[in-house]
Image 1 (cartoon, rainbow, N blue to C red):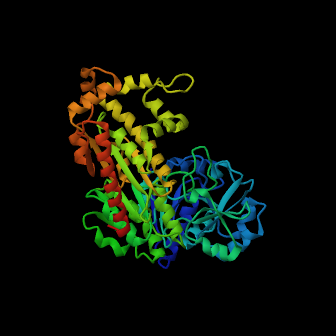
Image 2 (cartoon, rainbow, N blue to C red):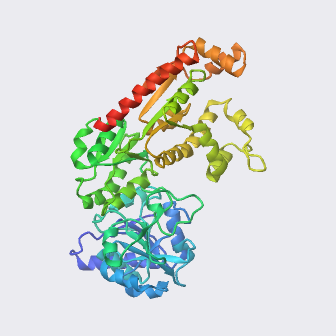
Image 3 (cartoon, rainbow, N blue to C red):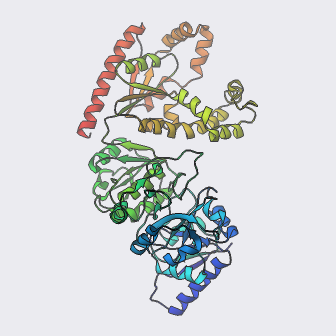
Length: 555
């Protein structure tokens, strides 16, 4: 498909050419085509919102989940009675004050709006964009335009026509270039079908301005966390991971000077950094994208998606991002960054200490973890967490079942012996299984750690380094031990022969692997468990105190 490009950046240019381009775009939309349109927030991928077939093409072009509803774009409040019902007076109050502008209202759905636009909900999202070109195109089309952001689903939204062309050229009929978006983050979504009104998505209109006009507003839990897989979103941007570049993102919250120091401590040569202008000089060894000054929320909103998208063309393995506070537009910018990170968040101001322990069997990891418990710490057994996720998460079960057919019994339970036979004989099969496990395990561990109170925590994971779980740790510790001692311990512990003990050790990575990749090493060359326990107690007491001092002094 050839994608037409309409350049309407200069609205004071050749009037006849401008009118012809607007007419052409309106005609494409009216006839069922897809056209990317500029708004003050981000570029939208538009279709006739009353044509179910045209709307389905939006989902196909974006790769968008079918249960994710769309927003109808109107030219003003006079259109509301056509497409909504039981409209509260508050909707007209808000429209008079904030339309055209970055406010979307959730109202009861009218009969003319098809299921495809609302994802089958009995409500519809409506807004009036503040862009003269798009308002002219809607008037020309004569129908409301359903339009999510004009990017491939999951990627950062587009704030320029050039970014739209990167994602959508050849997939849609036209792209209208109306210049860069002046707001930069999507509209604020407010549900008016409940009392008090509920904020479903923070956006370009700060919630404080809404509350000054209409009073208290409830905040949906999806603003600050992930929805469960079985929940249906009532508005765009609530459920799915959004705005994500190819490299994984970690958001660091807290006072800007502290979050910058925390990123500096964690970032390596392959890290990308998104930071406020004042701190860019701290990251000379990393690829850096700046958000603007820490006090300039408008600039941060305009730059956040460009910063995320920029890393897809840069050689980075991970991205750390400073996060503004939740006042004003900072709530929307922080929400977009956290969505991009899958809510993988580090708190720079936190006194939480997370240790990651790894090493081969027989080295003494269980004893080391008992010592941490004795110091008041909490241990998260990653293998146990994996089993819990597997028992409950249908998406994980489906991913394993499709990659390893037949490993689930007719009653839906996993045949672990059969799966073991599938993966342990072939390295590439084991790696495939591990990648599936990591995809679900790492975010779940992050969520569990985020929900905990300040204190000492330890991750027990033999694949700590391979899975990427080391990224959430303040320190990673390799538990090592001489081979002959490990052989004797395994023989006594598991009542197996020396030959089998040596075979088990030989199948695992050597101590040099863990020693070279972890932050520090605890070597267990003690003759007795009591001697090692005493040594481990001294080691972890000093280590925890050192980390506490670093956090207190921002080292």
